[in-house]
Image 1 (cartoon, one colour):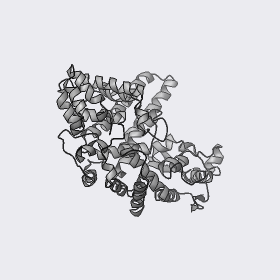
Image 2: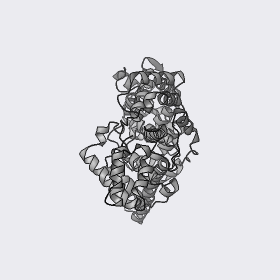
Image 3: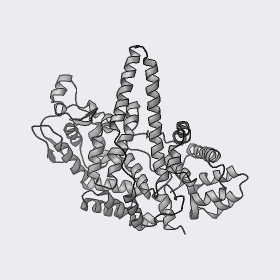
Length: 448
């Protein structure tokens, strides 16, 4: 029999806390969401200044300006250090969270609004997107998160919204440029209604025309009326806008999409699959969707309904920890705290987090597509994936667990989840490292 607190630590967190304490019911998990730390400082000005510097330095290098090479090296070093610090902050938050449910939800919503860090600019802007567009809203209303995510510079850049002009707009005529439907399509297919929802290509195009004024600059998000398609647009039978282009109709459309029944079911289904497993029971999805709509797109209503269902507490562990989860759980089990993670040298973070994630199939902030990381266990548990996990377990044991007794580590990492077979294998291991590796490579540690 697995105690509810142990089950919750694995299914809804990053494993047991070092002191072993943690909530074992829906009320405790929901209460833990109110215990999150202070909001991250808005460092947009710092990031954009570095981005602007980097662009200027690269331009000088192309023009062979004296001293440009040295300037580029200095800026590239600052850029790499900031990126590694961003990853340290992310890992330290997962490792140091008292319960971890809040961090798991942050990761879920980061993935729901996937942005692939495909170039240097997006790598610089993506952490700002996570801390300023997603994190503040995980316990609020989805409509507010949708607004923030859809208008953030990183999303606009990633989905080429900066290249979208109203076909009949003044700027479009002057520059000979037209519509880009990427943002409109992804909002409808992935962020709100779902790919199987009942909308047509005409809805995508009209919505794309409605979004044409969205842009950004050094100050952040901006609405550019001269780029916007003039006149009203009709999306899902609802008319938005009129003679004067402004932001209000765009926000109204986003709010309506957030409150659409298809969106409610789409979000509910994704949450159930992520935390409990597939297939998501239709009755649970329906109950969650109804609670969400009744509470004006409240995300807490979604979480509460899911957690109060007995299937959320079933002892079967149907999910597989993704590589980042695996590394965070190992650090947590080893007794590391947030300060220790932040104190690690950049090279250690690159070697033991970023490189290991990539080897296990999860290139940091680079999922294969805009629909995010795969949820099915079969994607992660493959011959190649298993070999990479075993190598990681060996490396982590050798580098970070040398002083740990394997049996004590087994108890801190798995507690009552450890099977009698695993306990016997760890106790009989030929070496300390072999015993520690067995724990990290075990099905119990890799499944949630």
